Length: 182
Image 1 (cartoon, rainbow, N blue to C red):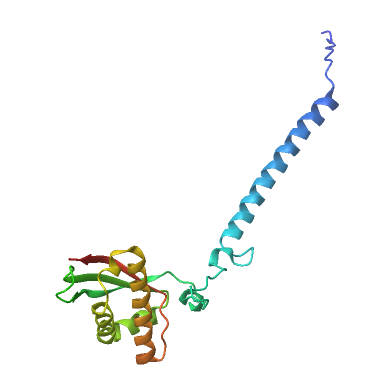
Image 2 (spheres, rainbow, N blue to C red):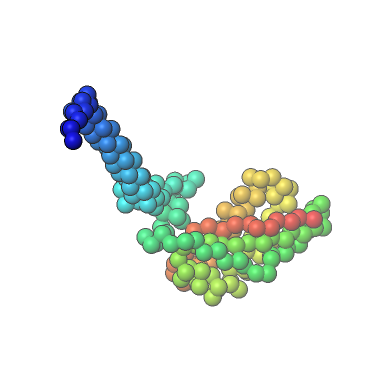
C-alpha cells in the first residue's frame, strides 16, 4: 500500500495561541466577577467598610441630643413591637368641637428586657399617657405637626415613667397605629 502524503497547511502556533488567549480572557473575567460579588456581599453585610450594614451613622434628635437608637444595644437585633392594649380613649371639654379621641399605640425596641419592663409597668405608663392625651388641644391635633408633636411627647412620657419606675428610661420609639377624633 502506498503511503499517502497529506499536506495539511495548518499553522498550529497561531491556533494554539489564539485559543489560549480567549481562555485566559474568559478566566480573568470570571475571576473579576466572582471577586466583585464577594466584596459586595462582605460590604453590605457590614464585614467590610466599617459596618455599613449595621447603621453606622446614628442621627441626633431635633434638640441635638443623641436619639434613642444611638443608645440601642450593640446586638442590633430585630426590632420588637409591643402594643399597649386596650386603645386609649380620652374625653375633651364641652366647648370643643371634638368630644373624644381614641389612639392605638405600639412601642418598639430591640432589647427584650425593655419590652418586659413596659409590660410590667403598663398601668403607670397608661396613666401617664391618659393624662398627657386628655390635656391636649384638639385643634392642634388636626395637623400632622400636632400629631407628630403628641407622638414625641408620648414617647418622652413613656421614657419618663420607665426612668422613674426602673431607673432605665430607654425606649427606641413609639408609634400611633390608629388615631381617631370625633
